[in-house]
Amino acid sequence: MPEPKMKNVEQLDPNMKLQGANDKDWQWSSPMEKPVQISGLPWLAEDKIYRRLPQNPQWPLPPAVDSLANCTAGAQMRFATNSRRLSIRVQLAAPASMYHMPATGQCGFDCYIGAPGQQRYFSTTRYDQKETEYEAVLFDSDNTELKNITLNFPLYQGVKEVTIGIEPTAELSAPPQYENGGSVVVYGTSITQGGCAARPGMAYTNILSRRINREFINLGFSGNGKGEPELAHNINQIPDVAAYVLDYDANVNTVEALQKSLPEFIRILRVDHPATPILVISRVPTANEFYDAPAVQNRLGKAKVQRDTVALLQSQGDTNISFLDGAKLLGDDYLESTVDGAHPTDLGFWLIANALEPVLKKLLA
Image (cartoon, rainbow, N blue to C red; front, side):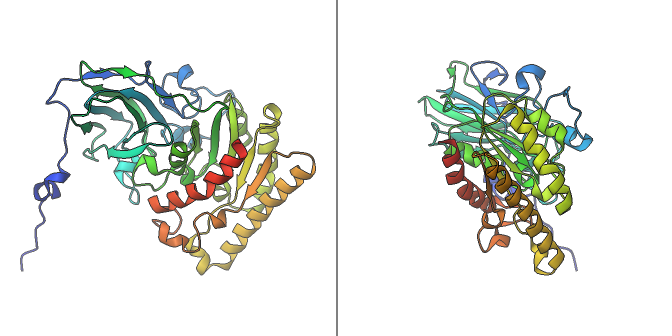
């Protein structure tokens, strides 16, 4: 009996067809140049590369963190234009490679249009996921109004080069300014980094950036944000910080390791930022807890360490530190909002952002 043959979906559905930008004239610009503004990469002006930590750090980085810092999670480029069309050219460090995360989230860009607080999703780059270079049209319309554009960078891949294309006669101008008061620095895990969002704009730091008009700096390091003091020293170099979020519980294997790392991490941050709000978040539950009682005890033990650490610091006079129980972030049916029993889907990230938004707004008020 002959095996059934499946045609390429692009042959069956024209809406799935890839579209390049070579059939029209374009004015190409580097986002490294004004008036485009890039956020989420604190060392960009110094190192001139798309990287989340310094290229030559004063405090040496763990090798895995050094590598993951090249992933551009949380980075955004922002500008305004009256162009009727917008395209993007991208050179990645490597092709898509993850089995449980779409290539659009790992290696793609997505586009939002609108002023702060009013950004609406519009499109995601379409490209051949086997390639490391691609060109994609983000919109092509008859609209000549001035549009505020936010493009979210890939979450789990490095970007070597990127340029944006608009009509040759169109204007390119600066975006609206962020609210005064500084950026929000979020340090944590693979979930913080955005695994496994379907597209970059659905990482919870990017969702929050659309609801709170501030720069969000995503320092999630998949499996490797473990509260090392070297990371705290490097994070301490970021200027004008409005709040820190410490969400690295899931990367620390034992209660004892967290008990050792967390107080020291906070102590280092407090050297230069004695009054900056710090929010400590415990990890979300995972599927294995249904059948693994020690896993439950491990999570609860680490949550107690974080709660007790915060309570002790508060009793010593630190009124700008607080604790949030991560078990409540995804709600009662939390496993339905995960890809693999641990990493959120877009729904999961939406639920996390919903839970964090009022907490952060109160801290930033």
